[in-house]
Image (cartoon, rainbow, N blue to C red; front, side, top):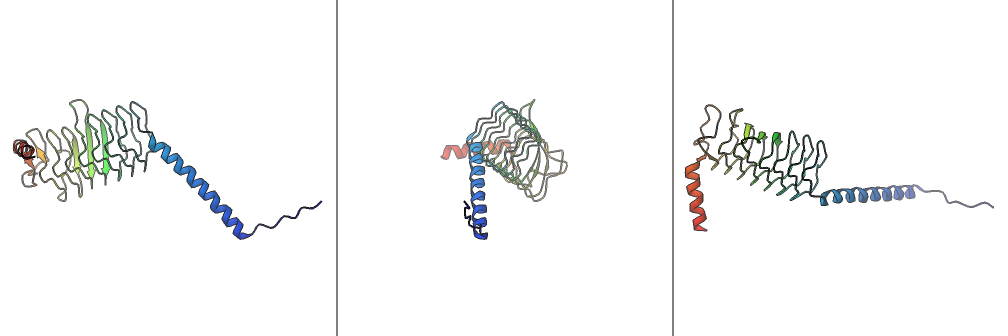
Length: 216
């Protein structure tokens, strides 16, 4: 007995293709959400891992090894990278506003990264070496960091540069350093005038900060 099978039309082909695309998209979205929900990565070996475009606000990367990991375009607001190894992590266009990178070590080449109000304070034995280009470091704590160079369109307004070493490279004329705090242990490139750039020496900056706190 013959069974009549209707021919598949072009429209049905298109509809089947769209259905397959929808299923694939949902599967991919589900994988992304699962990755985003996992936020405790402390003490893990995450070398070369891909976190690009992930939403990991407040994630814990304390003591993690993240060398050569990809965090481009990731949202990492208030994430914790204390004492982590960050050699050549890509933070291209990532948002690390308010993040804690204190005690982290490694060399970072940063471009278009938001590190406003972040804590990057180094220690005598562990510190970050930063190469900056178009990076937002407004109000960031950069104590004891090694910074070379400060490239095009970087914003270090109000940053804490006490004990930072900036001698390894030039500071771009387009960099903003208004009200950045420095002290006698801050090393600027030869010929750079911090006062002319709008920086404030620690004693004056501390008095001003204390005065502001009193008024609140």
